[in-house]
Structure formats: structure tokens, C-alpha cells
Amino acid sequence: MFRTFIIAAAAALVAPVALVALVALVAPAASAQVTVIGGGIARDCYEAVKFSLGRANDTEELCTRALEVEALNISNKAATYTNRGVLRMRQGDYDAALKDYAAAKRIKPGTGATWLNEGAAYIFKKDYNSALVSLEKTIELNSEDIYAAYYNRAIAKEQTGDVQGAYYDFVKSKELNPDFAATDRQLARFTVTTN
Image (tube, rainbow, N blue to C red; front, side, top):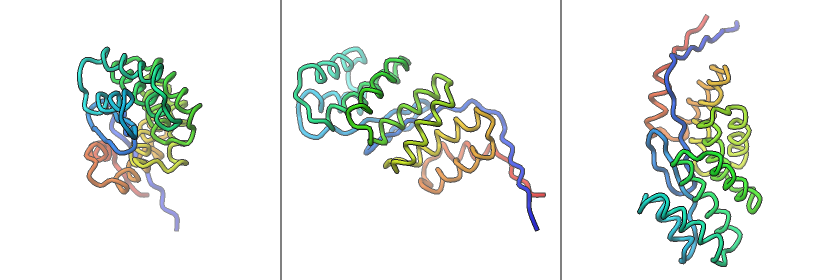
């Protein structure tokens, strides 16, 4: 006996969530950072982005200075690009954020946090197919905050018409992080019936 599942979602404005290794700040347009090990300007950049310290322009200058003048190892340089990208994404400068994520990926392509944020930037730009590519890579890399990758991928899938795929990704996000309230709000929009 086969059962057909019909999944329907009520339309809603959905804000993507970009969450990255070690830090998760959830808000309508959440952001996150990549930890920089050690001290120096790059660490100051990380903390300014993480805690939203100071004015955005000052923080961006701080991150840029870290990239230009500080002798950073590969991991910290990639993390600093990602952190500056997060800051730029918060300011709505998605193209500049995507350039920073691309630079971080060239330096250290296996960092799931960078791919996750890149996927969120594409969602903000309404480029859902590109978002799906980035989020698939995040999941493939088994990023630390993988529940956020499933959540964001659900958003992108729903926007491309894959409502059933979106539902199952929201379910997976809930399974991976039962305390993530945004997933509950999304799942409440769905009606699942069997035939």
C-alpha cells in the first residue's frame, strides 16, 4: 500500500538565517562570525562583529586593516574575510559580502561557515539557485551549525517551488536543533495530509 503525502505551506515572508561556527545570533536577519585564534587586529574584528561593537563603518575599517597589515595564518585570514562579509551582509551590501566569502573560500575552501553565510547572502539577493549550491556544500562539509544550513536550504527550496523538500529540510533542522524557535514558526505554516 502506498501513501501519498500532500504538503502545503502557507505563504509567509521568510528571513534567512546565517549561522556560523561557534556563534549563533538569531534575529530576523541573523548573522554569525568565525573565531579568530590569538590576538591582534583580526581578533578585534571578530569581537566587533560578534558583539556588534562600535559603528559598522569603523568595524569594517578594522577588519580591512587586519587583512592589509596583519600577518595572519591561513585560517585567520579566511576567517577575517568571512567576518567582514558578515558585517557587510548585515549592512545590506550583499555583493561586497559575496566577494569576501569568495576570497575566504579561495584561501580555505573547506570552511562550512563561509559557505553557509554565502548561501544566506544569495537568499537575501533572491538568487535561490545559487543559495542551494552554497548550502549543499555546507551540508556536505558537515558544518558545525548544520541545522542552519537545512533551515536556509528549506527557504531556498520553497522559493524555487520545492515545497515538499522545504518541509523535510525544516524537519531536519528541527531534529538537529530542537531549541531553534525559527524552525517551529516555519513548520507551523505547513499542513501535511495523507491519501
